[in-house]
Image 1 (tube, rainbow, N blue to C red):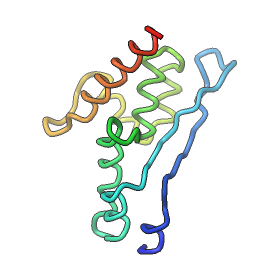
Image 2 (tube, helix red, strand yellow):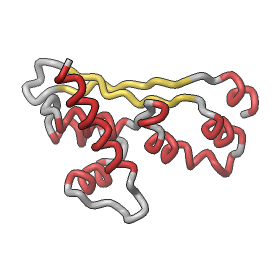
Image 3 (spheres, rainbow, N blue to C red):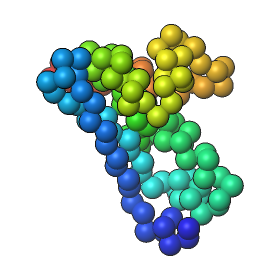
Length: 127
């Protein structure tokens, strides 16, 4: 654990999700950057479960994202169907709840993610 935590720089994993026609595939990437917090979570076995939350919260500052955040963005951009996004989701039940706007009161990371991606899309459209 110590060796991995000290040498890891980043992890990028991708799933190719078909569009609604089945003609194209879009990459949904989960991105982890080895921040000091992530390194601590790797070193300490009891904190390993906190890595997913750290990825969700790290999208603005570190450009990290979970598969589900990437899938949500692809779905909102009409690049993939709901069925395709749900099939590729790490947690389909949670993904469907988020689509309905249901989240726990302590979970504001998705709201910030949506604000950030909306702002980024607007900025790209201006260029």
